Amino acid sequence: MRSLVIGMFVFALAAATMAARDESVEELKSHADSAPLQDRTHLRLQIAELQLRNADKFFKDGDSEHAHAALDDIVTNSQQARDAAVEMKKHLKNVEIAARKIAERLRNIKRTVVLEDQASIDQAVQHLEEVRTSLLQHMFSKEKDKEKK
Image 1 (cartoon, rainbow, N blue to C red):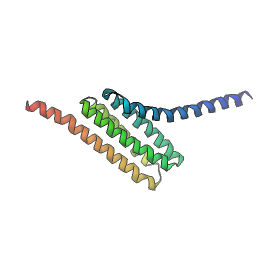
Image 2 (tube, one colour; image 1 turned 120 degrees about the vertical axis):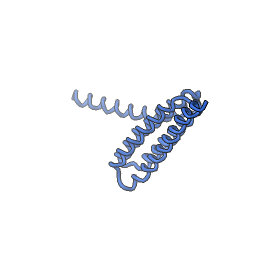
Image 3 (spheres, rainbow, N blue to C red; image 1 turned 45 degrees about the vertical axis):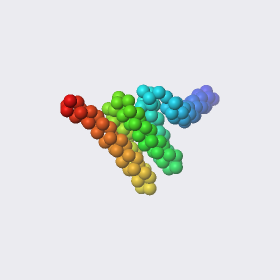
Image 4 (tube, rainbow, N blue to C red; image 1 turned 90 degrees about the vertical axis):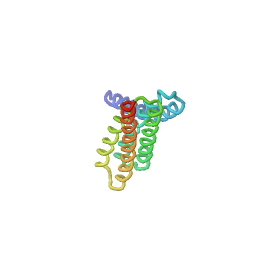
């Protein structure tokens, strides 16, 4: 009887944690839209990383529709983090590193999903590589401009 109560408590706690994660993504999105520019980069990366975990879970559960929506959020928020970093001219390196890690994790997830879902993951990785490339161009073009002066 005691183990049943403990088991039910653990299950309830796990269910509450999953619900809190879903709410936290939505809360982070609304907060990121109204956040000051210096906070947007961090918030957008946080959303992308949470959605990466969600996409992995959805793919494992066979829920392709939600997984593809999470992939779209990953790409969108990574691009918005890049845009905020470029506009501020700060945190470029952090965004580039985060985009690289997310792309690497997506490549690992790709190996575990069905063939039909692999193309959408490839597209997301390609968009993340474009984010990284543009960030690297901004980072190194600054150094070239400083050398010319």
